[in-house]
Amino acid sequence: MISYYQAAHYFRPFIFFISISVAVASLGLEMIGTSNKSKVYVYQLISKILLLSLVLRLSAYFISPYPIGSDPWAHANFIENVFMSGKINFPHERYFSNFNEYFSKYPIMHLLASITAILGNFTIKESMSIVGAILVISTIFIYLTVKNITSNTTFALFSMLLINFSDFHIQWSVQLISMSFGIAIYTIVIYFVTVQKENNLIYKLFLILFMQLIVWTHTVSSFIMLVSLIALYVGEHTYQMIYMHKLKINDPSISITLPILFVALLIYHWIDPSYPFFEMVTRGLINSLSKEASFLGRETVSYVVDSWSSILNIIGFLILIFFGIIGSLCSISKKDANKKLISLIFIQIVLFFIFFIFPVLGIKDILPYRWPAFIYVTLVLLTGKGFIIFISSINKNKHVNIIIISLLLIIFSFFMITNSFSNVDSPIYGKSQNQELLWTESEMALFKNVNTLYDNYIISDSQTCLRPFQTYLNREKTTIFLIASGGNLNQDCMKNKLVIWRKSSLTRSVQVNGYRSPEVLLGDKFKLHMDDNFSKIYDTEDASAYIDLHSILYESIPKLKTDS
Image (cartoon, rainbow, N blue to C red; front, side, top):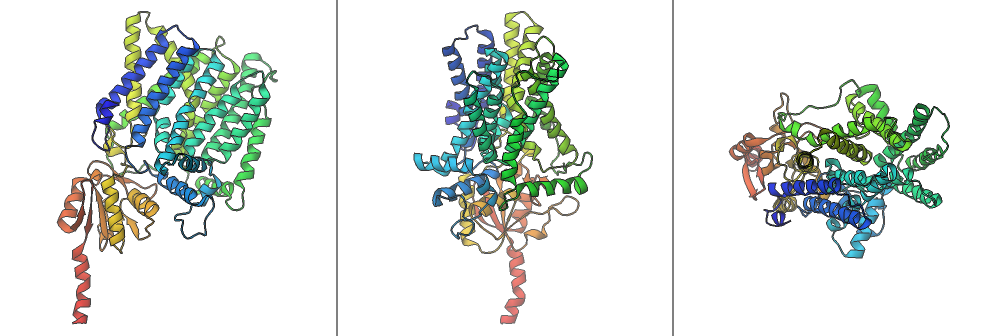
């Protein structure tokens, strides 16, 4: 925290991430090495995990006074409108800008943030942080789930530690959207489905309540929840047939009634005539399958050169998968297998299959890049189990085990908390591989001034055009950089326009040609072109505004001659 406090603005220093990684390793050693499993001691470990997780995530979230990422700008705008009006549906009121009908059909997260802003007298940015905090706190249910399934406190604590420092879970507690709250509800539902208590009626009532909440929170979250419930049901029956040689389960954790009830809730909400989400998705999916889908047809075109940092970007993910496979193989042995573990493994198989096969076929409607955060919820149990089994089997020397555990956890956590998914603000590696979806105060000051003073079109990279200008400033006269044939930037599109240049584009790629289009590293060449051929009219440390005065004067010559 001292290193973060002393760092420059909009930057978290290298030592900050090293400190977090060392702290994660220390907690891991404490969990595995101690035999003290009293309730007080367990609560202390849980508190340490939550505190360290909040420090990491809130440091990234509050690194800028504006939303982090792309979609959070639209959610923040909707929350502000709800806050000002006290309503979730205001399409015909002229005061409210950029009304998004989709959000009004899935308003739970926005209502929560709005209520927090009112009760706490917080800004929209501050009130949205409650969603990230809830996502962190929901990891307690991962501890409870693993403890219930394995009856092993060490496995449970270790699984909770892993999820709190996994990249995609961190990403969606910093880039806050409706799905962030959906992940938290998904985690709670998994607990209520797998838990077995004497007073089962109360748990079933809570389960139905949270199932209803997730339907009204986010579409992708609810769809993954449906897939998980079906996978749990099928997994239990698979276990019964393979291990018990029976078709009927005497004491099922999940009955067919639950998936059917959830389907009914989804269909009721998704066929709403005012927003027929089911029809829209089905039409898009059919279009993808009939026209766009092809083997290995995923769009990967980019004008950014790949480098070794692409591998470093997924090292943490590979470590998670490696130990997850070990844990899965151990869990399917007759000695360790039980119906809940087999059901969770079945969830992993189904979710990973959809996560990988849809992009391979070129189908993007299910937003596969958002699925890992949900996959991690059940994967960490298997990963934690695999990790501890691996450590206990390779060496009996205590000091060697301490070194191995420390190195593995430091490497895992460091690469997880610094990759391009969890750390959009100042990645330590792979700068050219991802956009800087963070706008500084000086950049926003420039945007606000040119928005007020300039009447013609403003051109910039796609994300700057869409978020600060169109979403935040509600400006219509904006356009984006275009790529000409051969991969070169189209210079003609910048004529007679005010051009926004960001300093980060020297080392970070930017999006051009619109949504789901290639990213381009503008670099020094673009900056030199702007300085030589355009006139700089506004300059800050982080951004500049240019105007093509030559074209404006040239086009005004015929009019001057006519007037004279």
